[in-house]
Image (cartoon, rainbow, N blue to C red):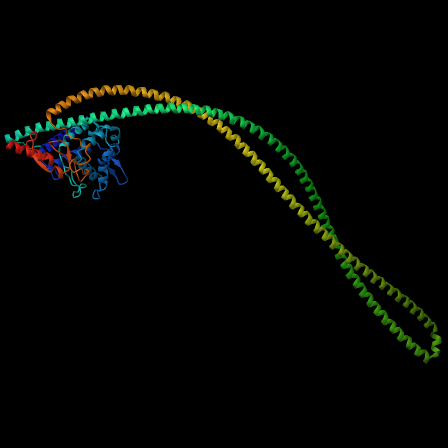
Length: 598
């Protein structure tokens, strides 16, 4: 509490001394002016009072630039200040940016307005300040009221050459402890106090005119909104009528669509039933065909297996025949060997017969003795000859059996080749039948898929009809909602009419107050003091104002001019010292002075 009271008193003293010193100088203030520097130091201490510490990645941060950034969101006029502060490259800390922001706001003569906007939104300030901070209490509003008096001062502060980041904000109490020694100083202090009161009244008058203008603007806005609401009501009634007509048309269309849909559904149901019956019949026939073909395939597979078994048996018979042929060949070779041996024996017998014949010639005697032996030998030879004939007959039979076996083998080979060809032909026929059956199955599957697609399309059509019905129900609900909105709009219109009546009463009261204030103002001042917001161009050269081309009031006519068009200074009856005057007023006043002197 004591700290807040001390800061409050210091703020009052700094503003008072700044206004007194500025009026005593009678010129624009620069950044080297000590009372102005001390004012910014005290204001910075007031803004820092009760600030919350915010933790960041770098560390703890405690800066008053955070709440000042909210002004750009709440008051769009402050966007120029924010952009110019951000565009200054030499400012690297939040403290420097905050000081630059305060400098620019004082040069624009809107420091009190911007801080008042901040105090009107204390719920946003609570994020940055503690509950017992100076800006959160009534002292903040008092400081904003004191800052209104600074609009009398013209300041021209250069930001580019100054090191705002590293300045140390220390309050110099020596300025506030000086005492005036001369009586002339006391008289000047009384005059300055009167002038301060006069300027304060002028500022109050300006604020009241601003509030009246705002109220008038609000009334105009309310009238416009009322007319817009009436137009919207008329449009809403027309829309409701058109919607009702559209609803009737939609009902008729819905009934027609229902009838058509019911008819189409019945037709589609009948068609689907017929198609299903045909599909079932065709499916049954195909299933029967498929079962028959499957049975034929099984039988043909069995026949094929049997033929393969017969082939295997015939191949075994062939191998056996080959083995038998080899055995017969061996037998024939053995018999030929026996025949050769028998022929050799015959030749030996012949040789023996020749020897015996020679011996018979040589010994006739021995012939007679050996006739019996010869006869016996002849019997033996006859037997040998008969056995030879039998062997030859056996050879002939074996050769004939061999020829017949070869003929049988050839026949068997031909028959097997024929059977193999027939089996291959049957297999190719079966493959062709299988391919045709597979094609028929594919075609049936495609037909089935087409039927399923048609069924899906019909289902989609039914779902579309259902969605249209649901849309109709939604349109009915929207109609009900529109009727409810119409009732709500009528209630809002009634409330707004009541509010307009109340605003009319307030306006009548404010007009009466304004007339009183105007009478007081006429007594105090002959000309109207133009607001800073109303002037965007210089009245004489019509150049647009900016941060470099600043606004300056003419102390005689109250209009706003640039520095070049208001560089003259003259002493006026309301101002004891020379003050800023525009060129036209300067010439007029000089002419008056010359005429008075003449």
